[in-house]
Length: 402
Image 1 (cartoon, one colour):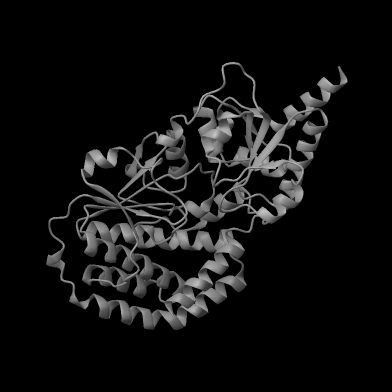
Image 2 (tube, one colour):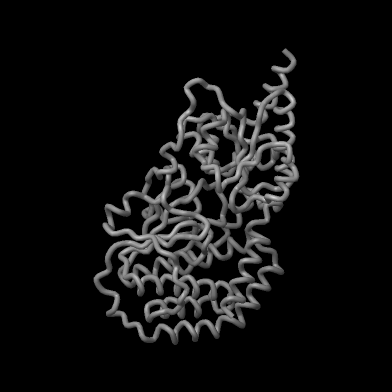
């Protein structure tokens, strides 16, 4: 049954969270809804508020109903199963906690984003895969049952919290770490309760950034024991999204310390490379339109898909006359090195390019509305020196006329 709900959840995530054709609420609308919620006085309310905001931001009423109906039937079974599995673990087994374990994801590696401070603080830091042997010990059970009593009419909220708390419980009982470290969990509404559990048994729940963020309420009301941010810009942004401010530490990840250097002779194989992320088909066609203009005027262009989110079939259909980089065989530093301009709408590659001394181009051409949203959603690279894609298009046209 766990596999059933997991498959259902993944399918709904793809249909909703990763629906890149969908236009979300404006920042003003998001803030109005967020501010209408009761201020969170504890971690239970933080988790619940985040849950309500996530439902509001991503899911229609049909999806919410499906999630809650499925969870209603699975919740009793999984609760009994997890409590039964955890009955053999006593609280006195959690002694001599030492080091930190970093829970790796299948799709994102931590090597170039992990804070160096973790090694200094915890000495022994190990990267491990998450163990899917779910159970809850007594402290975890106490937290979950309290959550159950408060929010009994929200089965999906309860089921997801149960799964995340049991995941942390499993990892801590296996490894006995002083700190359980995760990343790419900023949309996870169970985080405050997982943090509460870890701190209750004497451990810490720690996280760090894995990419650039823009302002949206799907990241609101989170609390970790410690959260490592790349810039004070993000501290201010997340604080405005109701994160307790005392959890933040600022660091510069390895990926923002430069991965290549500009060519001294200023001669490049390509005029521009566009780095796709999670673009809609409309935006893809807009980038193709810009490339056709560059190509007509003699500029050589290439694109680089996102290894997880790009619609490769559609990109190959639209850009059949252009080079499409293979992300598996061409490393990012090589991709940067052979091009004059590095362009995207909003992507961490723009930050990496900026700190590598490259010239960055923010896409205001393929989807003007999305670009305007970046302005109000506080995209950090708009505060750094950059060009706009529309400027390059106009420059190309003007040079042809001279």
